[in-house]
Length: 306
Image (cartoon, rainbow, N blue to C red):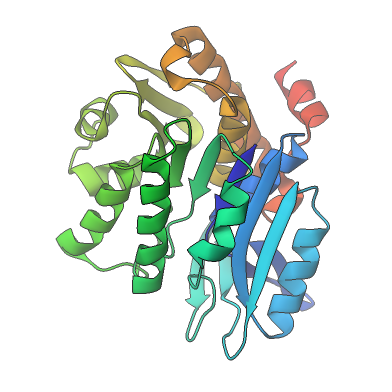
């Protein structure tokens, strides 16, 4: 079972009829993707005690999660974003004043941990806040006492949401150092390591037993694990309609494929196949609007690969 936690965000897209709301948040999207692929997925997050919180909780409960815990925070607002799209690419403007997404309680989270997930997947938007940092510290400390548990992390950098310079980099690097799986875009890898070449960058973040997954858009993805590494190209080029959620769909398949596996025992050939299929999930997610709505099913994935 994969257990995820982190930001719940309502993504608002400007359509002809006005702003259209869709459920979002990188870790939530990824865990929803695991569930939609047929994997065992659970999630914990928080929203405000407002209409957007009601919307977010309703959308989440329609998904096939094994366990779902969404806490409502009185006096807080549900974080939401305005998503601007241009030629398939998107930018986000966050409305996060007095937000609820990073107010996570380890005591609330612990009963889900006690169900013995194989991987806990963490979001990044809690990192700038003391409450979020405290939650991460407790989660990392829990892992130290449970060596079979693995931590996964998606950097998901958003300009303006994190401290600039070395202070911001340290937040990410410290958490990566505690993780077994870390996903970054090529741009995020360059930002954190000051290396333009992927092969050089991953070596700065490498550690025994740590899988590094680097997404590279139309070029595919790159993996590094204990000296095993490769650039895995996409099956074929696609014409994106909306790239929102493409990285989350990639992450969803990666988590789905790694559930219950010992990273030390994963072969080079298995990694190539996993990343090939994760690339396909990411590509398919760009062919429809929205994050969760665009996630492929197992049937759509196999049809694309065949």
